[in-house]
Image (cartoon, rainbow, N blue to C red; front, side):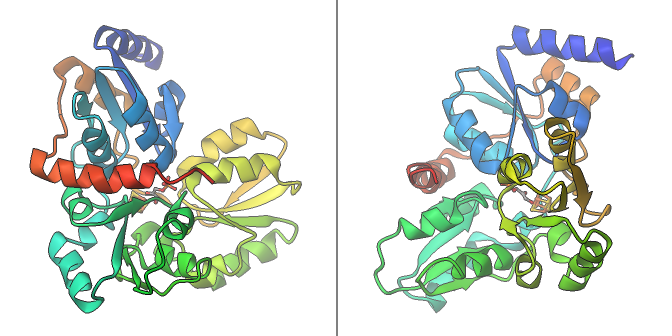
Length: 306
Ligand code: 13P
Ligand code: SF4
């Protein structure tokens, strides 16, 4: 079937099912193109919570669809490829959270949204790459450590921005964590006039070389507003599609052409169509876990925007 017919079919199904199509900034170009909203984890969580649509089709990875199911329990949340996971989210369990609470007694557990619902339920508050610093600044300083879970790199970045003791679980994103300062210096040498924007999931040595550190959505703003004509992008390749469309006069250079999250690339147009036809796979969260996870997410969403 031609893409044109497929897209037309999807649009009709979206209307018929009273569905909204959300796509993370790392999704395939053609998925971003047909989405009602694209965004980072924080933006998409807010949209899921506020949307009035009966069905949310989430093109992203499992923890994102779970967040939508937690925040919008009266809606049906479809994740077209149910196996689209996040290896970082699998690096921590509720038992790991309890272990950290035992080691750092009285510490506040701040959990990155890249986690399962059960881990969120065991936490005090959530954060995303877009609001982690604001979330920690919003916490009353009781002299106890802030326990950041599960990303060691996001935690170390936040620790440079807040006047609090921050401790962390040693999880990481395999897509961002492999790159070192050497990789950045090589690309910078090839593009001496370029500025460098990096995602906080990159290692501290990479972030030290960055002109701007931000979430995936923050990168679009930086890309539009910077005076530089060349920008090196230190995150997953999926962000380049919209960036190049929005600022065609600029040159965007990936830190590496291998920065591709295979889970984020699983979903294709046929999967979206099939999910809308069959109304499967549905992502649900057991109610006892959902209630506790919603508290951690709602607490995050009530932190004023930057
Ligand atoms: P953002 O919240 O910045 O979109 O990041 C999500 C993610 O999975 C990054 O790897
Ligand atoms: Fe998870 Fe990394 Fe993929 Fe983001 S890019 S979904 S953190 S594996």
